[in-house]
Length: 344
Image (cartoon, rainbow, N blue to C red):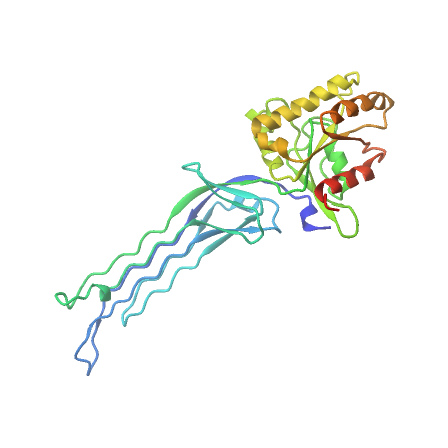
């Protein structure tokens, strides 16, 4: 199974503290050697403090490690020495984070960067410069300078890391719509499945094989409810992950306590679109596909054709599926592949 498809403990938001290294102090030293009458100042410069970098790693899928380790520090630069010897520079601190991590300065709220490519680096704290030794202060009027500079302090910051899952297909729907069941049938992911709302508390990704050469990652995202754009339910944590998906799969199903009707299902669909639009209108510009679930039930099949006709008139591709019986799942995978690889 691909590492991207593993079902892991998923932490998508943490705060950490980073501290770059201080620069080393410059040295006050004088050259005093036998048979060298023209001695003088020879104090070296202090070494530069180490920087703190964030490095994107595609093999990581969660910010779990940073939930337990909150402080990261680069090493300080070494002080200068005599005989014009400069101090060693401090070692950089490299912090590995999953691809898809967005970095914010906690104090100012400023977004510092967005790590979306494997190996991408972001400088988040700059090390202090080393101080100059007394050699730099020699002049015609000051032959024996007894002054040197102190090293500069390294930059310190408190950062908020937010992970936006990188997935090809994001499954969107109301709580208890069957998203987890669908993902488990299409891939080898094993999300939690139960008959109560908000079973899925964190996104779960699975790898779906199209053919011998192509596969894509599908993500089971937490359920969406009215007011999610204001933080209701899992709210913004849910909507944040949709931003990274290349394609949105709307999974529509009826509340089994209600009588199936085309009007009711379309209202639920429109509610999903409205919440996405209120969060960010650009979400609606992504390719979208609609799947109507529970097609193994006769009462659902009776009104599904009406829903398909009305949504198709609005430009949406609609398919009927049943994760329980397997009806339409192969066709759904092919339809998703056509959207992901339109040139094929």
